[in-house]
Image 1 (tube, rainbow, N blue to C red):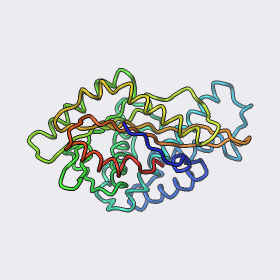
Image 2 (image 1 turned 90 degrees about the vertical axis):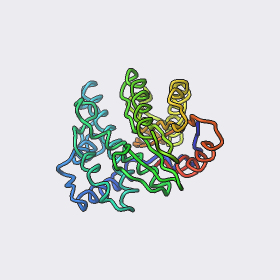
Image 3 (image 1 turned 135 degrees about the vertical axis):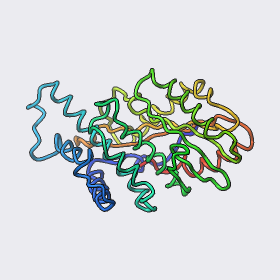
Image 4 (image 1 turned 180 degrees about the vertical axis):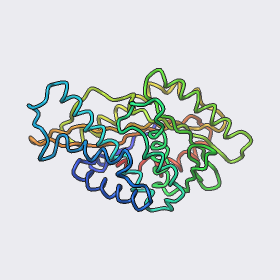
Length: 299
């Protein structure tokens, strides 16, 4: 398991900067022919006004239940905005045409997560998020449906199956499904490895409503995802085979930061990578991979 140790300021994106970057991301969608105002992304600009806007109600004007609902919508909007900003930051520097269909699918769906069991937009979003992680690391990435994401690492192909986990009961099913799909993808292929990637944010939302600083937020979220990986190591290890070499767990979150009598909003992405094989060939490959994606800034 790897723990990144980077300056926390690079890991937590605060609300004002998020809004600026999000508007640029929406403009980027428009330029690609995906009119953002006709997608779920337009809703988040309105949701962001629920708390920190001149016309927003004061806390005393809400009932407790209303305030919980408003706060949830505000933080969910912040998290969704952060995801688009991350994807745009990488895809805008490559040939975005190859990702257009995925971006269109990512833009569909209900604005609030979990409102529809048939909503697949967040699955596409996670695939793009994983693709952007490897692109950021300098690798060639393909979304050609041979797997969710295919990465070229020197003379090898790395097949990645991406799974969102939204409840404890789903986890073992998603691990089993990822193993089955990877074995199928890798069958008969030489110089190929596989990794399963799991988005576990909805599974790991903790009860901490606010942090005292960006540093505390980053350290708290990092402890959460590393603790999850440690807890699930035995089961994740059931995927181990000759060519299935690792599991990546990811947590994204939006939380309040209360510092010096100021209320801020912080967004963070924390991840951990578990090596599933200890052979020298896998270790050498994994170390090269890790040096590029394990210590990049999870902005």
